[in-house]
Image 1 (cartoon, rainbow, N blue to C red):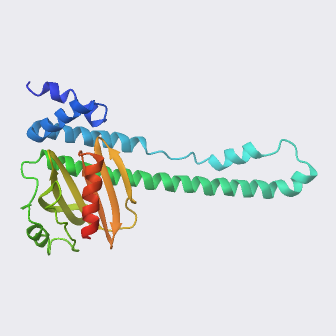
Image 2: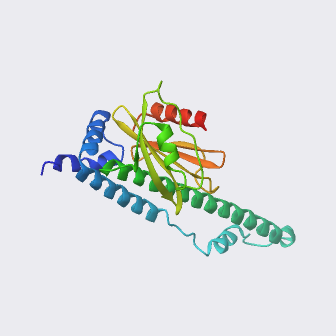
Length: 248
């Protein structure tokens, strides 16, 4: 098939292991080939499922007993008879608190990874769609009012005339069953998704990272949380993020 040579590179591309020139070629092909873009989306979802399964680790319920056995003295002395129970209890308590903290941290990171993964999947689906937006316009004064009554908040869009960015349009998106706005911007040959949702508190904190070859930026402002996702350069994502922050 004509696309065999491209599909053979998808896993390497999604893992971020392709040299930059080849990665750009795959980017361009995915934008023009719905079949390969859909295949890329399926593989992203499969990688996410495998990654999530690998994160599901439950500590041994006998953890406390093993810790107490490890720190117990082999032969009691006068000092140990008086203070060892207190020492064991305190040490075990500290270890349990540390363990609970680590488990909470691991849970939060897992939730953050799943959240970012879900948004990356939505962005990939946009790239594969023949009709990626519901309101098509480069005019912010057309796109912003379109969301009125469709989402439970309002937001501002930046002035782009003196920038390399072009507003393509937008659509309503959902995250954890909460409606929000997804705005599509273009810079040169790259498309970027800007997601805006009401701040739920437990979602990802402010960060800049790379996920499956996509750059991700997120921050909170005035009760809203913003996510910028795309395969453009890190500087492009930073510049678009700054424009959106200034408009807010």
